[in-house]
Image (cartoon, rainbow, N blue to C red):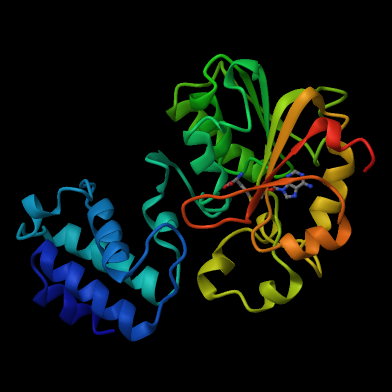
Length: 299
Ligand SMILES: C[S@@+](CC[C@H](N)C(=O)[O-])C[C@H]1O[C@@H](n2cnc3c(N)ncnc32)[C@H](O)[C@@H]1O
């Protein structure tokens, strides 16, 4: 990439967005971290580097950049297309159901389908009035725990993760949302540090990437912590440990809502008779399931 040349020939936001898109196409970058195409990816990266809102593009389209800004934007584009670093790690920001979360390479970039269901307070599968305690197991950046706190304002919400690094990021987000006193974060290998505590609702977006998928991962995903992704040959390593423990940590009428990506077949191979409900979102229909405490007794 003729970087020096780019810096002297690009002037406006339109120029840098155009150049970013061309470079993305030339280098064949992979998407999957919050944007649908190169246009969205380029505008997100450029506008958020410049600390501008990405929904008011017209107002700034022909605005010229200062030399320092141009340097920063071109560095960030280079990082995106040459190092294949996902845009949210570059601008330290990921959006999920209209909320922004701080991210860096210590956590998975938020994209869980569970977020969509939380927008509707998980109705009709949950009676929101009956939710007094929520656990977000494998909380990572804390995104689902924070969205759960928004959905169930009066509930006590706890986020748990095995990774001290991830919890450091979750604490940043907790502070940003003014939830220091209202959101508990616990370092725990699954339930090991949660004693005999029970919750009305357990959310979990665990690692579920199969060994083969790990080997074929596009470069972008290799920037994410392997601990957040890999789950053995069939992607069920964490699930095999999690499922039998769930019944000891749900209240009598409790419900667990769990995301397993494209692992439905592997899941049903292990628990063929378990009555679970697959939740259909706008885009996908068998990525997330709900299971009731009372249906887990025989696991
Ligand atoms: C797929 S990420 C989900 C992060 C976040 N909930 C989200 O949806 O963006 C999985 C998370 O599980 C954590 N994790 C992996 N193994 C774990 C274990 N044995 N116990 C608790 N957390 C674990 C990882 O550190 C990572 O933060």
